[in-house]
Length: 211
Image 1 (cartoon, rainbow, N blue to C red):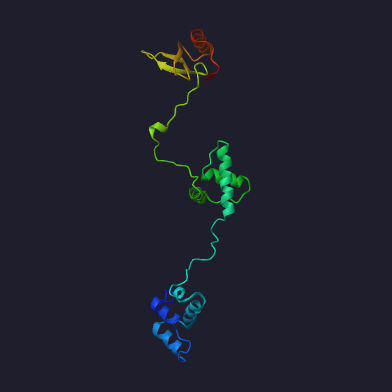
Image 2 (tube, rainbow, N blue to C red):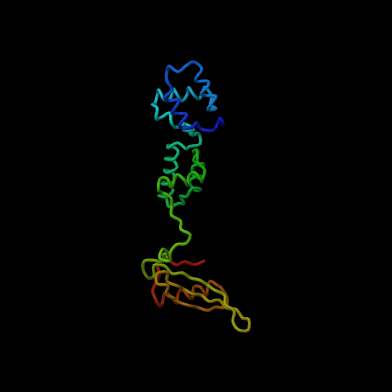
């Protein structure tokens, strides 16, 4: 029998029920017949005495009693606390961001892969479907008309190769084209002209965005 091969349950049962008054030399003969060592024989018999015959019928687990690579619960709690702090601050709080933040704080940071497993174990992992449904997309808008206008300028080529610049002023609440102006170039004077035109037609906005 290979030394790494577990001892058959029938052999274990025979050892567990081995009589105390067995003839001298019978253990050696039994071990030779079944290709096991005397050390294995007495280990199984001792287990039967200490834990009962039923326990001796199965080999002990080879799983180590301790796992050096296993993260302590305290480390997991620290990672979750850092993740929660990033989340509450409106910052990215995925495994990579949490790892980098822990390192910057001088903490012992698990690898991003380990952090991802921890987040799944604690049911805090973000759901990341391959493609979001269309209904999940929300267009950002300002709450009321004239809360914010946005000014853009686009170069346009006319027939014959001439160029012009189209200024367009848009309300970021309704997407209404507040005013439009065409100029020879992208100048401050042209920008002021389209803004004045929009104010005359719709009033003064609370905010104006332009590059």
